[in-house]
Image (cartoon, rainbow, N blue to C red; front, side, top):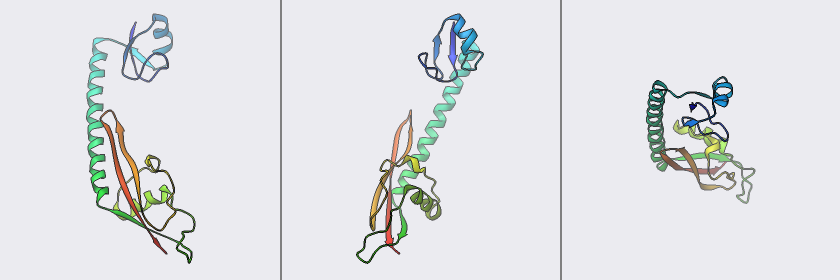
Length: 152
Protein backbone atom coordinates (compact mmCIF):
# COMPACT_ATOMS: atom_id res chain seq x y z
CA UNK A 1 0.00 0.00 0.00
CA UNK A 2 1.35 3.45 -0.91
CA UNK A 3 0.54 6.31 1.43
CA UNK A 4 1.43 10.00 1.66
CA UNK A 5 2.64 10.95 5.12
CA UNK A 6 0.89 13.93 6.70
CA UNK A 7 3.35 14.06 9.62
CA UNK A 8 6.82 12.74 10.36
CA UNK A 9 6.56 9.08 11.41
CA UNK A 10 9.52 7.44 13.11
CA UNK A 11 11.20 4.71 11.03
CA UNK A 12 8.77 5.32 8.14
CA UNK A 13 9.47 8.75 6.65
CA UNK A 14 9.05 12.50 6.76
CA UNK A 15 6.00 14.66 6.13
CA UNK A 16 5.05 14.85 2.44
CA UNK A 17 6.87 11.68 1.38
CA UNK A 18 5.12 8.88 -0.49
CA UNK A 19 6.11 5.57 1.09
CA UNK A 20 5.14 1.93 0.70
CA UNK A 21 3.90 0.31 3.90
CA UNK A 22 2.17 -2.97 4.66
CA UNK A 23 -1.59 -2.98 4.09
CA UNK A 24 -2.42 -3.58 7.75
CA UNK A 25 -0.09 -0.88 9.06
CA UNK A 26 -1.47 1.67 6.61
CA UNK A 27 -5.16 0.81 6.97
CA UNK A 28 -5.23 0.13 10.72
CA UNK A 29 -2.66 2.55 12.13
CA UNK A 30 -1.48 5.38 9.86
CA UNK A 31 -4.72 6.38 8.11
CA UNK A 32 -7.10 6.21 11.13
CA UNK A 33 -4.72 8.28 13.27
CA UNK A 34 -4.39 10.96 10.58
CA UNK A 35 -0.69 10.32 10.05
CA UNK A 36 -1.10 9.44 6.38
CA UNK A 37 -3.59 9.22 3.54
CA UNK A 38 -3.88 6.78 0.69
CA UNK A 39 -1.78 7.72 -2.33
CA UNK A 40 -4.00 8.32 -5.35
CA UNK A 41 -3.69 10.51 -8.40
CA UNK A 42 -5.73 13.31 -6.78
CA UNK A 43 -3.77 13.20 -3.52
CA UNK A 44 -0.49 13.32 -5.49
CA UNK A 45 -1.71 16.47 -7.27
CA UNK A 46 -2.78 17.95 -3.93
CA UNK A 47 0.65 17.15 -2.48
CA UNK A 48 2.39 18.83 -5.42
CA UNK A 49 0.19 21.92 -5.01
CA UNK A 50 0.92 22.05 -1.26
CA UNK A 51 4.67 21.66 -1.88
CA UNK A 52 4.62 24.52 -4.40
CA UNK A 53 2.74 26.75 -1.94
CA UNK A 54 5.19 25.88 0.85
CA UNK A 55 8.17 26.64 -1.41
CA UNK A 56 6.70 30.05 -2.25
CA UNK A 57 6.08 30.75 1.44
CA UNK A 58 9.68 29.77 2.32
CA UNK A 59 11.02 32.04 -0.43
CA UNK A 60 8.95 34.93 0.94
CA UNK A 61 10.16 34.30 4.50
CA UNK A 62 13.78 34.27 3.31
CA UNK A 63 13.29 37.56 1.43
CA UNK A 64 11.85 39.19 4.57
CA UNK A 65 14.76 37.86 6.65
CA UNK A 66 17.29 39.26 4.17
CA UNK A 67 15.52 42.63 4.33
CA UNK A 68 15.76 42.62 8.14
CA UNK A 69 19.44 41.63 7.93
CA UNK A 70 20.22 44.63 5.72
CA UNK A 71 18.32 46.92 8.12
CA UNK A 72 20.30 45.54 11.07
CA UNK A 73 23.61 46.46 9.41
CA UNK A 74 22.88 50.19 9.70
CA UNK A 75 21.36 50.47 13.17
CA UNK A 76 22.38 50.00 16.76
CA UNK A 77 20.34 49.41 19.89
CA UNK A 78 21.02 51.75 22.79
CA UNK A 79 20.54 50.51 26.33
CA UNK A 80 21.43 52.02 29.69
CA UNK A 81 22.83 50.09 32.62
CA UNK A 82 24.01 50.95 36.10
CA UNK A 83 27.73 50.91 36.58
CA UNK A 84 30.10 51.33 39.51
CA UNK A 85 32.64 54.08 39.97
CA UNK A 86 35.29 51.99 38.22
CA UNK A 87 33.13 51.67 35.07
CA UNK A 88 32.15 48.04 35.64
CA UNK A 89 28.54 47.17 34.96
CA UNK A 90 26.20 45.79 37.62
CA UNK A 91 24.44 42.69 36.28
CA UNK A 92 24.06 42.08 32.56
CA UNK A 93 21.79 42.72 29.59
CA UNK A 94 19.89 39.64 28.41
CA UNK A 95 18.77 38.81 24.89
CA UNK A 96 15.18 39.41 26.03
CA UNK A 97 16.02 43.00 26.93
CA UNK A 98 17.78 43.48 23.59
CA UNK A 99 14.75 42.15 21.69
CA UNK A 100 12.40 44.45 23.62
CA UNK A 101 14.64 47.44 22.90
CA UNK A 102 14.77 46.57 19.18
CA UNK A 103 10.97 46.49 19.08
CA UNK A 104 10.67 49.77 20.96
CA UNK A 105 13.42 51.73 19.19
CA UNK A 106 13.35 50.38 15.63
CA UNK A 107 10.08 48.39 15.35
CA UNK A 108 11.90 45.20 14.41
CA UNK A 109 10.59 41.89 15.77
CA UNK A 110 13.27 39.37 16.65
CA UNK A 111 13.15 36.09 18.54
CA UNK A 112 15.34 35.92 21.65
CA UNK A 113 15.86 32.17 21.10
CA UNK A 114 17.43 32.74 17.67
CA UNK A 115 20.55 34.51 18.94
CA UNK A 116 23.65 32.52 18.02
CA UNK A 117 25.80 34.38 20.57
CA UNK A 118 23.75 33.64 23.68
CA UNK A 119 26.11 35.16 26.21
CA UNK A 120 24.69 38.04 28.26
CA UNK A 121 26.22 41.43 27.57
CA UNK A 122 27.95 42.59 30.75
CA UNK A 123 30.28 45.42 29.75
CA UNK A 124 29.78 49.09 29.00
CA UNK A 125 30.41 49.89 25.34
CA UNK A 126 29.57 48.08 22.13
CA UNK A 127 28.71 44.43 21.56
CA UNK A 128 27.95 42.59 18.33
CA UNK A 129 25.55 39.65 18.58
CA UNK A 130 24.77 37.34 15.68
CA UNK A 131 21.18 36.23 15.17
CA UNK A 132 19.69 33.58 12.90
CA UNK A 133 16.84 35.30 11.05
CA UNK A 134 15.86 32.41 8.79
CA UNK A 135 16.70 28.73 8.52
CA UNK A 136 14.98 26.47 6.03
CA UNK A 137 15.15 24.71 2.72
CA UNK A 138 16.25 27.94 1.01
CA UNK A 139 19.33 28.29 3.23
CA UNK A 140 20.28 30.28 6.31
CA UNK A 141 20.12 34.06 6.79
CA UNK A 142 22.05 35.60 9.68
CA UNK A 143 22.20 39.18 10.86
CA UNK A 144 24.26 41.12 13.36
CA UNK A 145 22.73 43.22 16.12
CA UNK A 146 24.96 46.02 17.38
CA UNK A 147 24.25 46.85 21.03
CA UNK A 148 25.52 50.08 22.58
CA UNK A 149 25.41 50.06 26.37
CA UNK A 150 25.77 53.40 28.10
CA UNK A 151 26.34 54.21 31.75
CA UNK A 152 23.19 55.28 33.57
